[in-house]
Image 1 (tube, helix red, strand yellow):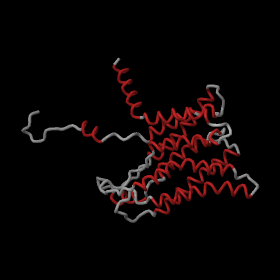
Image 2 (spheres, rainbow, N blue to C red; image 1 turned 45 degrees about the vertical axis):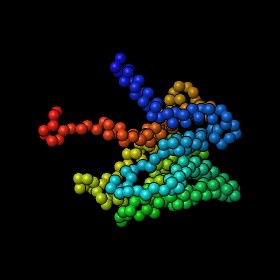
Image 3 (tube, rainbow, N blue to C red; image 1 turned 90 degrees about the vertical axis):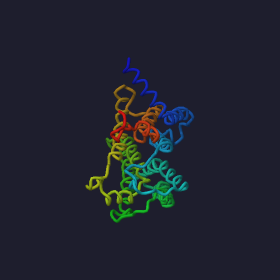
Image 4 (tube, rainbow, N blue to C red; image 1 turned 90 degrees about the horizontal axis):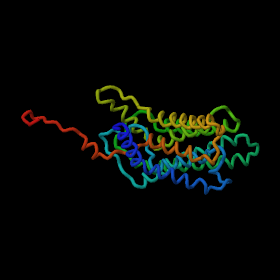
Amino acid sequence: MLFFEKLQRLALRGLKTNIDLIALWVFYIALQPLIPVDNILARPDLIPWLMFCLSGALFLRGKRYGDGPHISLTQTKSIAGRILQRIVMVATPLILAFWYDLGAALHLRQEVSFVGTALTPAALTVLALIFLRLSVSHGKTAWNPPGLPSWLIWGLGLVLGVGSAVFLGYAAHNRYPIPTEAFLLGVAFLCSGAVVGRVQNLRQRLASGSKDGGAYSPSVFNFLFSSVGSTFGLWALFQIQELLGLGKDVSFEQAFVPAAFIVAWAAVVWPKRVPIAVTCVLHEIMPAGGGDKT
């Protein structure tokens, strides 16, 4: 009985903590029947729907990956900068979906059609970079030690993110035997949390080192956990559906199932912050004077 009571308490605590994401999933369930069959969100490959669902989860829970700036430094706050960064984070999966479609359109022989397909993701990417530049004051700290140049890391990240989306779209059109939907979801999870990061924070950590005087080792767990975990999870979900005899491909009629996975994975990757008061209440206080009563 104690085990079931503990399990019940954990379930109720999880529901209470993630009530915002649960409400988001209910919204997706209610929205799905209202979407016309010819709407882009109802596309058979589910790419627009998956990216749309992830954008909603990012709006509620999205946070940057990495350790952030050095803990001894004070970050500047900017309301406008915070809003612009949130817009870029939410828009990142949708921009990747457009680059994915560009990869699927590489076979077009008409030059005008291809250029028209390429203009939308290119313009959205440039607009996102402008927004990030305008929001540079939010979260900025005073110490900027020399080290890895920001333009190099940003350039590599942009090439890898866009290149991965384009390749996956090309692979899907040519029916390569890879789960392109699952891989694109992993790329979107990765890019969405990294797009608002700062190379300056990494330079600070590398320059200051660790508390024991050793060299600082950047943690890549959150990056890998969000991307690889979401890729494998969605792929496993499709495999389970095939084993149950429901077909190899998930149609839009079952789109609420991958939406539930995205919402659940967002809860794991971006958990709600625990109030600091809880930490203070649980902190044990011990006598230190020697003459105090036990």
